[in-house]
Image (tube, rainbow, N blue to C red):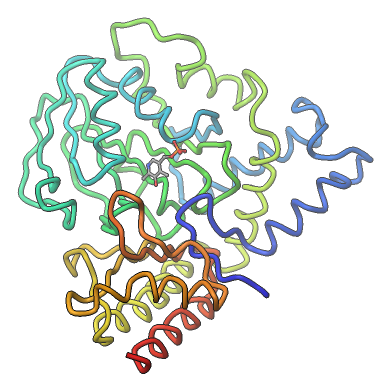
Length: 355
Ligand SMILES: *Cc1c(COP(=O)(O)O)cnc(C)c1O
């Protein structure tokens, strides 16, 4: 049975990405070699890496003065790499969830961290809006989409200071104004590629202003200068990323993708709001279009395991909420087809009829 993959990450990839990646495992670009065994310095792979970087720039309208690099280490590595390269004395962070607080923890190793606001006391069920960022802060860091809690900032904040964002779980889900940012990073395993590569978009003139020395591998300038080939990059995930980027182009780019995402999310949120068995868990105005979190309504709490089993028998995978939150989470990443959302909604309706 074909599964409906709602996993939070690693997560669904387009059929286009998977088919082309599978083909390249057998024969990469007519080389007679597998993508798994080819040299990262072969001209065929260098072309893949260059094309992937160019497509990121094209899809996100990355202005001049910015570089795109592919790194290892996951988004979690960026929690330390960002302050290593950008934090001189003080940085400001918005605490909107587990990933944001992990980023805060790392930044504290490099200087003063001002947490401008936090929704922790409320179980991270909303995005704080009343806060100000000190003018003398080296940068302001936020998490655009809180994968675990299902809240999202679907806008690019206006800041007087440098802007740094963890966009791991909503990059390419909407157009962004890159010119407002100095650094954007995203682990690939949500909206781009299999796990193993992290996308970084960085404004070049934001670098080189900290007093400390930076280990070679953790210095963005190393990877910019060597065009992501300072050491062996994650070859296969970068190849797969290129396929996803090509597929995004065929869909009409990120503006067209955003429309589809808004539509998919509305189908599910409407059902959560309508269906007496379920309720949403976060502030309506902060609802994520990528990760939709919901629980059983209070009077139907005992049906949680039952609905989980019911949905999984119908081929729904990955809708269990994060272990720290419970309930359900359906991740509706770019590659998730609308018919998977419709199938989940149909099961929610059917379950309601039975109870
Ligand atoms: C998944 C995720 C991370 C962690 O990514 P790793 O690549 O596992 O380090 C960080 N931030 C956000 C917003 C995420 O969704």
